[in-house]
Amino acid sequence: MKKISYYLFSHNALLTLVKDIISIVEKAPVAELGLQVFLDIVKAKFANYESAVTRDKVNPYTAKLNEADQERDDRFIGFKSYVAACKYRKSRAWLEAAEEIEKLVAHHGSELYRMANAEESAALDNLIADLMSEAYHPFIAKIKAEDWLNEMNKDQLVYKALIQEQVEQTDRNTNSLENTKKPLIMANRALLSMIELQQTAINNPALGELVDQLNNHISKSMANARLSHSLNENEKEADQEALSE
Image (cartoon, rainbow, N blue to C red; front, side, top):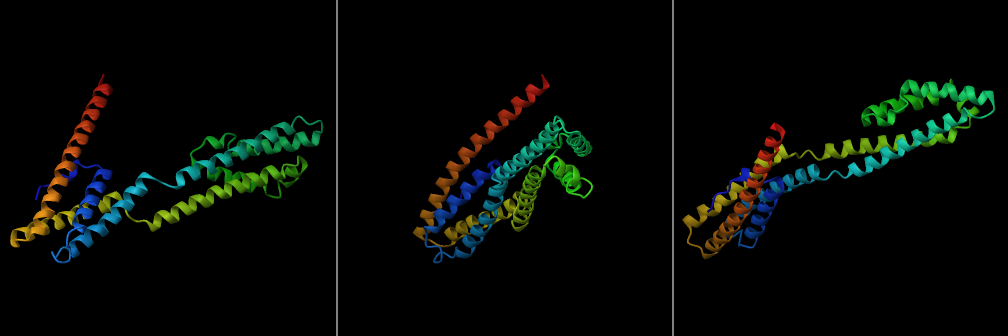
């Protein structure tokens, strides 16, 4: 059986390699050849690794959180702009109320929407809590800013709910690249070793055909992996040279 240099394979390439090996072995009389247990272990480890790679590559919450963050930013900017506009009303009471609210906004961060998301969440929580307190209720009511405040609070709650949902979903998926790659490689090696041992011990045409198919696949996969690895190394060297110039 041809050897596999696993270190040459990227995460996606390793997924493809093992997936194809599973497919090839499944077409053979697995139970008859005494390979079922080894194949089942590889399939289980493959599922864990695939889950880790998928989670690392595609986070379904990224787009949702970006959109929700933009919504709360828009509400904050809208609220702040509305308050600023209220200072230009003829009423002295409107001017004074708007100025008090502006002072509070400045205290928590007039440009808090530019903060890192976690910092923005904390600042916005504190601002909204103060704006909804009894101390600021007269000012909000005077300039009729209730709708702006309620919309800002609503979008802040939507964002926080998504953050919590993301944390809960992540906790359910404990698979990581670090703790799933090595078990997959070990399981795959065990399967291929068992096939090789069986071929040595038993003169079975089905085993011979299976080994030929696997060797053919491994040869092609190794050639592609070496090429990709070489290209990546060349890119790294070029980047290092550019940085040193």
